[in-house]
Image 1: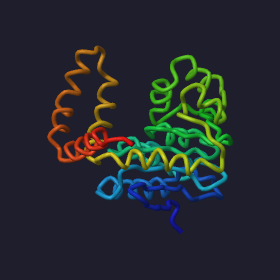
Image 2 (image 1 turned 180 degrees about the vertical axis):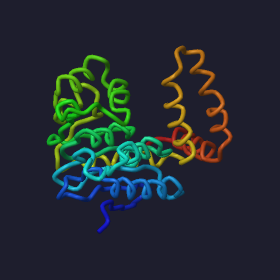
Image 3 (image 1 turned 30 degrees about the vertical axis):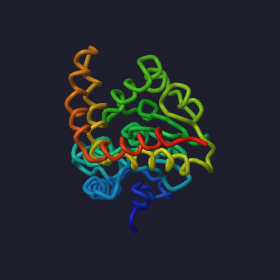
Image 4 (image 1 turned 45 degrees about the horizontal axis):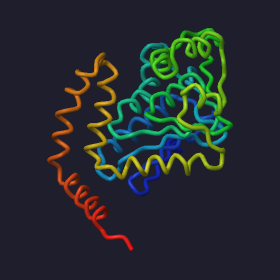
Amino acid sequence: MPTVHLRVDDGVAVVTLDDPERRNALSTTLAGELVATLDALDASDEVGAVVVTGAPPAFCAGADLSELGTSREKGLRRIYEGFLRVARMTVPTIAAVNGAAVGAGMNLALACDVRLAARSARFDTRFLQLGIHPGGGHTWMLRRLVGEQAAAAIVLCGEVLDGDGAARCGLAWRCVEDGALLEEAGVLARRAAAVPRELARRTKQTLRDVAGIADHDAAVERELRPQLWSMDQPEFASRLAELTRRISRPTR
């Protein structure tokens, strides 16, 4: 049976990890299916945004280390590839965290551009509590999002955040009621998908690049070329014309 399910509607792909008996743990099999699914979505002109979620009761309970075999490094890297492929997506990605996101499962959420958390969500690194060092870039992603002190509390002290707590510290964009999670994620995703696809891709790359820029002048230069490119695109001309028509339309 497939462990990843896909639904595409109105330019939005919903990717659901579906191995609920193991709480959607990232096995090498599931990671491989996830990579193949995301490869296809990134290559599709019909998809403008991706929502990643888990079949209840969990988002993703971490890595299934029982499948590593004799080559631990090779096995770990195969598992890493599941969430690293999410991080490399060229279209906007939204994590709809509907339950526990543990260890590598938290990495899966961190790899997305935006995280929405249900009230029942649980963000739990749990690496040190299991006697294992964090992996997959966990500390790097987390520290960039929440800062040094919060990252230390979460990783070193084992602080577990629910949906509200994740939103308060910036780990999640927003906390929503459990029953509204996918609907709210869909609203954000459809807004992103409504943007011209290549424009969204280039802007996402800019957001990545400016993370390594230290001053305003350099940021101005980084944005100038793609902004000039966008002004030459037919989508800009048509949308500007529509805006002009709306503004000039007489009111009664």
